[in-house]
Structures are given as C-alpha cells and as structure tokens.
Amino acid sequence: MLASQIIEIDGVFVGSLIQDTERRAWRVHAIHDAVRPFHNHVLDNPDDLPRHLEQARDEAIV
Picture 1 (cartoon, rainbow, N blue to C red):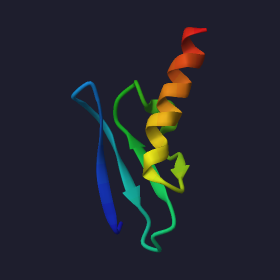
Picture 2: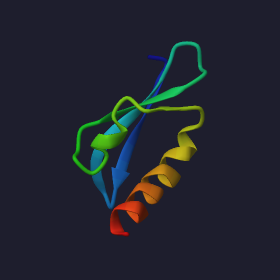
Picture 3: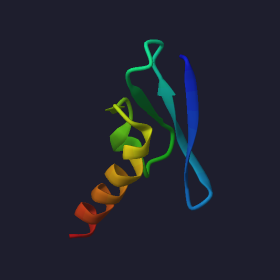
Picture 4: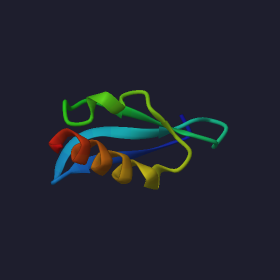
C-alpha cells in the first residue's frame, strides 16, 4: 500500500481507497453495506468513486 483515503457518506465511515505500490490504481475496501458492492473494485482515479456510488444509488431507486 502506497497511500489510502477514507470514504465517508454523510459523515459515516464506510471504507477506504487503497493505492497500489505502482501508483496505477486504487482499490476500494468496503466495510459498510452501503458500499459493499464496490469492495475490491479497482479505480484508475479515486475521484471516480463518488460518481460510481451515485450511479449505483440511482439504479437502485429505479
């Protein structure tokens, strides 16, 4: 692990993003049911996660 970032939704800690040692990708480590479907999901850019979460929420509502 090279770096990590906390993932919060409405102030609740739901997991973390962990950057690989080659600085190429970020892996989601989900600890809350709200983001469990994204556990071990790999992102090129950590800023993409909010978009993915929002898209999943919108799909669940429909």
